[in-house]
Image (cartoon, rainbow, N blue to C red; front, side, top):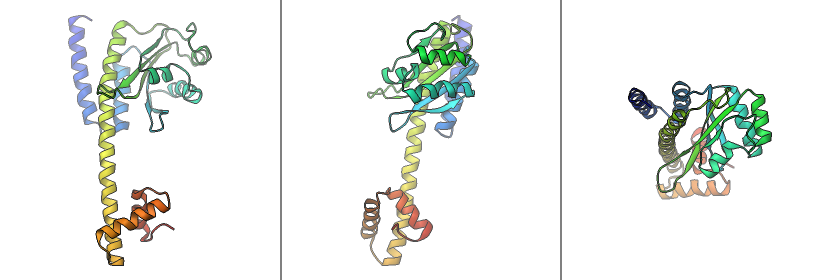
Length: 232
């Protein structure tokens, strides 16, 4: 990159960092990432797939339905560059889906969709766990569409996205934990008033119903609050 290009990219990424920081949650964060990819890179389509708790990829955001098709083909068969990028934590570049031989069946179907160039970049946190949270996918109908600068920018974008997604997920988890504590506290209050028991006994009742019905404690509390009845 020339010096003006570097200055422009630095300014652009500074604005992206602010936008990601201000995003309300994971969904908003991912949407900001894919929209930025369309603006900053030589791609026609972009998407993000995230790991779920079951260690399975899940479509998080796409800029066009064709990306969803590209993802579904791989998620269903658990085979393709997306899966490899997730498992091996390594970027995958396919310069032309009509000639790449690594995933021939998938490549042929993707080429039929009009996608010729594919770049999948893992979203991995930089902490000691090196946890892969997902993959940023960039697509073009033009063969060999991405330059070295595009690849460099894609890696920088992926690092920004990794931190932002991990942070947004943590905040959502914390918010859910706070919400759960509030619900349990309300449910305990109902039991304490109705049965004249102390807080330890009220919590023990909720916990027992949670275990006996194989229901999350939060859901038992919500049920009690909504119906004023414990689950059967």
